[in-house]
Image 1 (cartoon, rainbow, N blue to C red):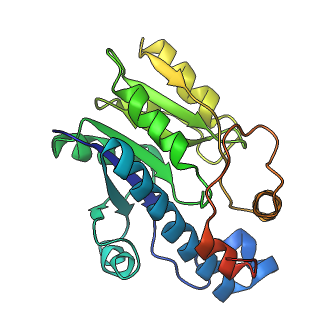
Image 2: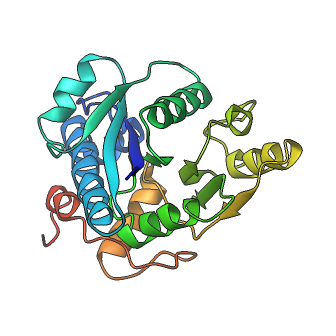
Length: 232
């Protein structure tokens, strides 16, 4: 039976190049260690979802050498796609196309900066994409983008002419979907950690205070907790 593919959009963590907006607060080595921990925790959550609804984990990474570096700490069940392009929309579209071409029932792409992303939200996405007539499903991000996008068919239109890394990403993608008559479901939101403010959200969540706007309880994220000096 075909499975859903869940791909983490990521790069191999490197000191001085990873989580650069957190370097002033954490330093280059710790910021890179945090990026690595994010991927470890997120990959574990994907495996948890896989045990319930059937899916295959991928790292969608760049450049080609990143696959070997990621393989050193991601689960052995993960596979790899190399997608190198300056335009994130072309990366997302290319990954969607290749994952569907591999025979997966759906392609679900996840931001690699969400270590507490709940397995329940991934499971909701997989189940939503299995409903009759399902085409596109989003989980918005608190910053105006989206944490997850899932598709049952290649849909380059929703990734075209999007002002990436701005607060209007989600809105513009939905406008593109409406313009091209693409049916969309929007599920509950999550958040990405890429600056000092969102790191504070993470610290609050790991301390037991769920950030405003979230519905699910987050994953425990033990690797992230360790890097941040919190209880594992």
